[in-house]
Amino acid sequence: MVVRSAGSEARGAASYPSGVDHRGASSAGALAKYSLLGVTVLGTMSNNIINVPLHAIAADFDRSISATVLAVSAFVLVLAVAMPLTGWLGDRLGRKRTILAALVLMLAAQLAAAAAPNLEFLIGTRAVQGLACSAIPPLVMGMLVTLFPDRRFRMMAAWAAANGVGQALGPPVGGLVSEVAGWRAIFLVMSVVTALILVGVWRSVGSRPSEAPALHLRGAFLLTSGTGLVLVALTAVSQPAVPVVVDIGAAVLGVLLLVGYVLVSRDNPRAMIPPRLIVESRFLRSSLAAFSQMFVLGTLLVVIPLYLTDTLGLSSGAAGLLFFALPVSMAAFAPAVGRLVDHAQPRTVLRSGLVVLIVGSLVTGLVATDEESVGRVAAVCALLLLLGAGVAMVQTPAAAGATRSPAGQTGAALGLFNMLRFSGSTAGTAWVALTFGRTDMLVVLTGCAVVAALGLLVSFVGPNPSEPARAASGAPAPVPPGASTG
Image (cartoon, rainbow, N blue to C red):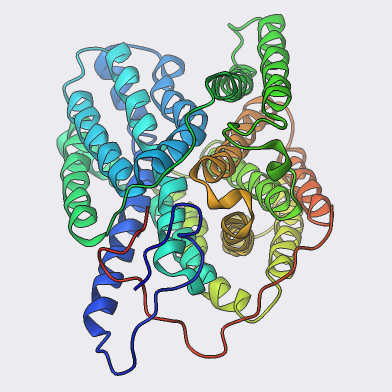
């Protein structure tokens, strides 16, 4: 076995002498894979698990819903902003070590949230949970493609499916646990799950400390603070209490800080993510396609439940059951997409997925707006299945493309990729807050179609990256325990 350096550990597979029994290594590799996918499910569930019991939390603390929703927003904002830094930290200290530290931090924050004496304390613990979860997407992506370097598309399909499972499980699990044992029990249950996953990763995933340049402090500050201000502006745009001039000022300052990051990082050997790698066609196309896909998903996650309950008058339980079609479709289609891109051009699959999101958004808007339409509930449910397939068709090749790009060999760049993904979701949520109730569903979902169309256009920007030759025969055995996964 060849031990890889930090810069090359994501390339090439381990080789085994002829006649060696690989079953033990294969079993250990499978255990590592499922442990890492479990981390992904945990992170996604943590994001949305208190969405259903928000009313119960608000009543317990005698606070308004608009104040209580900050317990959700704090998680997402810190998660998105911190991902490039935690990705860099994984490169610096080792991916396994960083993931374990993140899970320990998550466990502590969950226990603290269960004992929160007031809403402000709960919001703080949710922010810490977001910080812990920020390490999960970039590091798990990197570890999976290191363990299975020649099964990249299937690993990213499995990762996408795990995201779909987490999206599907979070709200119903949170609602059920809250109804049976109270909202505080949600964090106790999640702390047990976190502890089990922590042990699984510790026992099954090999490690070797990686190396990365010392942190370029000016660049890190400009990137994280600029992104944070832009996301805060997107979140606050729908809040009447925030003056428009403050919101615009935050957005403009955020953009200026991001421009400053480009200026100080250009031609700087210590740059956290060199700008020339960010605009490389494969990374740029993958990142903006992921942003578009998450804009659509973020919009659907908010507007469809509102439409089903407020417009059609369905109960929360019935709406939740119908909406379940979207994440289930995402999770079910992801493995098939992984197999598909093994035999087709990944960019063709990605573009087809964006077309599905464009058409699906427009048709859903038309159906939801037509009050004379018969069977609107069944039609919307069927369209959610279609849109879930479109999400899977974009998410898998976009994630694989990011990991195959020159920038994607570093955790910081994979953190940036995921930061853009979650920025898309934040923008979609803000779009719903601006438009729902003030216009009809066709306008809301036309916004999704426009953003997906922009992602489709960007997918044609720049030269097409060359595609490496496919493996002639079956996928190689995974890297055995003890081999470097960062």
